[in-house]
Amino acid sequence: MFKLCSKIEIKGDRSWSLDFVTAVEIVRDTEKLTAEAKITLPKKMKWNGSVEISVHRGDSVRIYLGYNDKLQLAFVGYVRDVGFKTPVVITCEDDMFKLKQMPAQKKSYRSVTIEKLLKDQGITYRLNVMGEQSLGAYRVTADTVAALLGKLSEQGIRSFFRYENGEPVLYCGVLFDRDSTPSQVFRTGLNIISDQSLQQQKAENMRLRVKAVSLMPNNKKIKVEVGDADGEHRTLHTYNKTERELKSWAEQEVKRLKRDGLTGSFTTFGASLVDPLDAIGIIIDGTKMGVYQVKKNVIKYGDSGFRQEITLGLRVQ
Image (cartoon, rainbow, N blue to C red; front, side, top):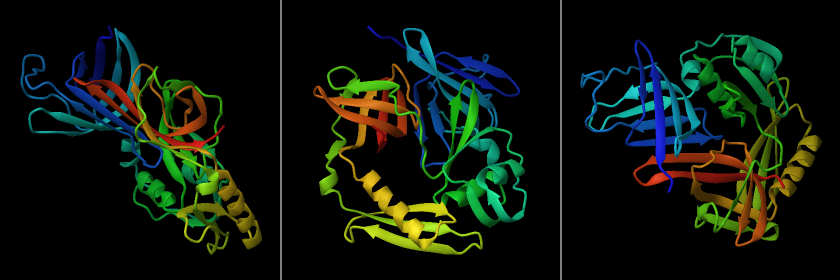
């Protein structure tokens, strides 16, 4: 029988190590700047003999979760809020918390890459910029570095942290290409608890319309639309492409997105945690359904067990 275990390390003016909490929920999402964790504390809890909670905004947090004393690092970040109601909920954010407090350097460029733009802001985190990098002419007007990343996201350039080899890595880009070899394989009857939210799609039945936007060095935009007039709308961004190049690129994207496969999410155990961008294999009722990039993972730990709700992204194999 599997026994749940946890460890929460909180460090600020004082250090605490908690080996029991009522619940934990962690949301990792490639569509969001910030990964968030909520820790629900036991109703009757004392801090070194005192009922007053000795945890404050900005304290560092590490969350470990697992079974049978085998803990996995599930979250690294900082305390954002400490609730005042019982049971107390501590809300935490990953390293984006620091970038939300880091003033942006107001700069103007005739032409700049994403990597140079971010390095000029004094970001010391390891960067992993994927896809085309040229932004053309650009002026930084945001008040904080996180707000700058938010403005980039309006152009389709997503940013988020992954924790790799003991350090946070800031990913930034439009499309994220990674190894298509699955790190894990999930199958019904073994480690898929529920696949009710998964849907199968056929390329021939998909209706898709892609709007492609190219930002030019003079800061003007070229826009084209391709695909099915009555299809689901997707918007993609790129840089410094002529109208002809942009249309060709958009048509390639339609072909790439129109693939047989699965969409939606499934629920599995927390035995081996997955990160956004991980490649995972799916087998339903003995049939291989492909390899997919993880778009989002919601980790839930508590009285009802230790679960992951994994949302599939692009099919990569």
